[in-house]
Image 1 (cartoon, rainbow, N blue to C red):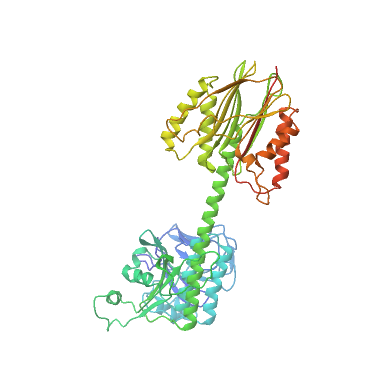
Image 2 (cartoon, rainbow, N blue to C red):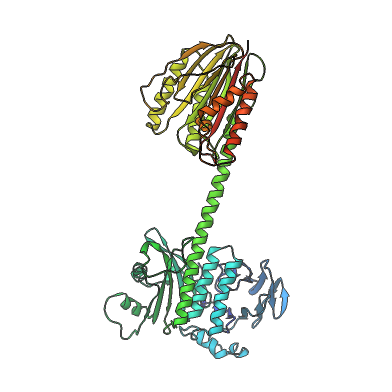
Length: 565
């Protein structure tokens, strides 16, 4: 970062008069010389009414030109609004609003006090130039103005760094300190975030030459306010105080920034743990002791709490943005997953089907599919992967591909299950498994199925009789050497097969009661003579009426297959 300090070869400078009447000379030693509210400008204007990049000064044809950089209120030279103007000695630059900063352009060297005589308070400017001396702590009005600037920044700025810069500026105004640094914890060290002097000039990180062990001690001891005033002639020993004396510092203030958690009281105490420390607000002076009267202590502590709140809000905002991004990605995943389900199921001919799958979360661990094996055979699969969320959805998609790429029929189904079981057991080590119902139906009514611990399917005979089909093995991926029996039977024309996941039978009402197998069988009985589409729709209607809008904890998948001669 550039530091606005006196140049050695170029006499051009700005005499900066802040709203409190304090003056300082800032050398134009880097071009373009940027002016505005943004923290990385060469001259930072701590006024929320100014633009982030308000103006700049450039070199052109041996002279100096000030330019408006699309600011909100514009720039004024000697009272006239300009977009671009060549500067002359003693030109006055303002920012389009009253009671704020005023800049006076000077081409005379600091040793020449002629320009100083042109302004009221010339003696004060002379005192500020090239020496460490500074006016004493600001009065009550200046302190109030500093706090209000932080409030303005909180309201108007979207940049965390800009607001933290306002906090440092306010702390400097309140205490009369010469330099202010805001450092935040990063891993095991401290990261410099803001470094400013009392005139708003940017300081380099190397300007903080105070031993870090002193700052670490302030954080470790977790005092609400650690202040030290020193007499350089009386300092003895080899401790941190001796190092401060070597730097000719007269006083130091370290204010720990403590984590503020949502829902907790803002007040912090000495008993807070070191882990609750975000960083430190550090202030120092060479000219004299800082004003830490009781009122100023309260203001500084308030600023530290505001800085902590700003950082916590920034963290929460970042979490919210990450959450929104995750929700967007999950919504896309849901669209993809729903797109993998069959779009159009057969509603006429010898084989008919109706099905749906409703995930409880954005993506689910259930899936179903209905697909032709050849002209005379169809395959039906319903699976329920253990667990919830993205990992279960990924495994469900894997199972879908495994069953529907070159599907088997008859006795070949058992071999398909065994190969898939070995793969899952090896890759997931039993941490993920799935219950699966896989069935094939031929044109002549030949039904072959494997039920890997899935919910018991219900066979509806043409005469309305209901038959629950037996389980033939354990879940896939649970036991490496498991085997599955294939059950084969012949269906009569008009038979239907109802297959669901446990999200149907375990759907809960607002009173916490499960829908249950008995209710499911009762619903099927009432519409057993109807088509597969009617049976499917009736079950879902009864289910919706039973749950009454209660939040569900499992995916709801339902498939009804119908056989005709």
